[in-house]
Length: 260
Image 1 (cartoon, helix red, strand yellow):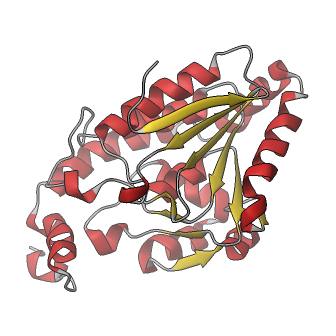
Image 2 (cartoon, helix red, strand yellow; image 1 turned 45 degrees about the horizontal axis):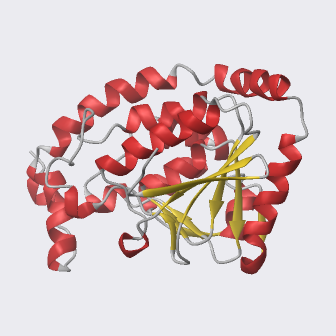
């Protein structure tokens, strides 16, 4: 299976799925999402794989969300908004293997959503977490909001989305957004160590546990599906486009002038 935007390898029973767009801060485009879906399904149903590490190449970013160069009221692939986000999120949740987010730098926007959805998150001391949607004319109307509230509590989730602050790895651990924070040069070793520990556990027990954990938030898939249609309509507005235009023009966005 050939990939362009990601890399895939198995190390002693642990599959490493890594976004390989460091020049784009590992932002994803439609092709990236399609390749990630294929890779998660490949690892998830490979009997030789016991756990999955999900990360991004380079030192700067785990993932910074959708590639803004492909967002002009639409993205470049399939799916409701031009990105198959619902399918990617579902793949991470549904594969019967634990998925560990390896966060070495920025986990921002859609990248923060991906880390949140993973079963566990191991962060470097240099990791930075946060949301930017309302600053950019965007939002995640599914797991990124509803599931985040399940993870960190509703008040904190609202703060993350409304104020768009950035949080250190230590703060992420304290709020439950990450499991542990390790020295930057020990991140890969710690991820592999935890992955190999998971490989020693009963795969059937882990699969049942994962599905059980997911059961009480399974309805959020429906929220995400409906929300993506609303998001598509929002992306077609001048208010949403103002966020991307302001970024390109290196100025502060003026969203309120488009409110009707």
